[in-house]
Image 1 (spheres, each protein chain N blue to C red):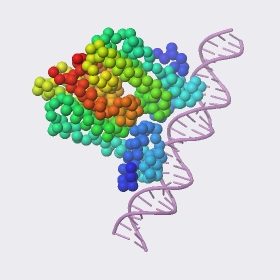
Image 2: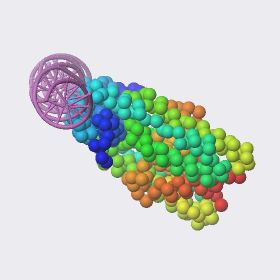
Image 3: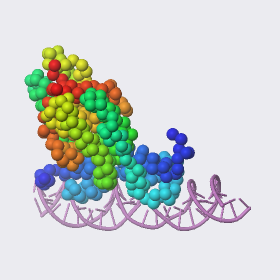
Image 4: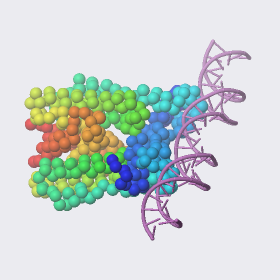
Length: 195
Length: 195
DNA sequence: CATTTATGTCAGTCAGTACTGACAGTCTAT
DNA sequence: ATAGACTGTCAGTACTGACTGACATAAATG
């Protein structure tokens, strides 16, 4: 990546996120963060004052975005398989984009309680959206009517599990690709839930 | 817990696992580990020589056990719903028993590459068992024949996602309990996969 | 009762890390 | 040309944490 076009602060924030997501807050020195940003440690402390302030500033900029909310409000076609495929593609797109922040949250929840709250907002909201969608599909006679919330949760956990295993990296399950996984799991859920 | 009956080393190993799974290797001091074990830091270094050696000794004792292998070899009844419910109850039993080691693995994979290998052995093996089970069920005409490996993987990811969210703790999804989740998700999978 | 074993206290050493003030150099804007 | 903004170097300070040797105490063992 060409860092020369980014400001000093941005480079430090990015370097901090990259290294801390990998090795944890206590596993990285301010010297290492500054070096990864192509700057001096002195500059890091000029801009942020402290290591913790640097981390807090880095995660403050984090937000999931509105795409999923928009999808549920505007893009549903009320066909189970099509809608679920859209949803899970968007899910993985958003989660992968925020992978490092999610990793920092998983690692440093006690250091950053506010981040834990904010990072949990999205999956919580998605669970509600998906539950309401299943309920509405039931009303339209397009979904079996058993336990929409638990089915929504099962669907989400499946994709969260896949996300945590980072299928794109090929590390944990080399033979399994994200796209075929999404297609097949959506088919399976569609088959399970269609009357 | 009554520590007075355990040996000195055992208490240190357990204290190390408890604290490091929570705060990471670099987030805990040897003084804190010793205090949690009810011993002095001096004693910790008498028994283990170094902090890293203590952690390595602690995770060396880890192994998943043979229960799942036995289940697949001896306990299947070749009814999809019953078998899947057995499998996922055993899965969560084993994973919850090893939660702290799994958490250490997720956090410190670069510090302990051997642990990463060993910790991954179990889900890999389970994926193979479950895939073979689905194939055999297909041969017996009890399962649709599409993509057994991907279905096995989807099932596992769903439960791994639930495991990571530690449903028993009630932290992330307070309204969702593990047992109803297992029952409902197995019903959903059985419904999806039965011809 | 003497010896051995195990643990705790204490006062360190050493290396590492967060963070800083002073000074110098470079680039940009006026 | 100069002032201002920004960055880098250097030589620190203060603190922290892994780890240790020496000595003392207590419990277990023969």
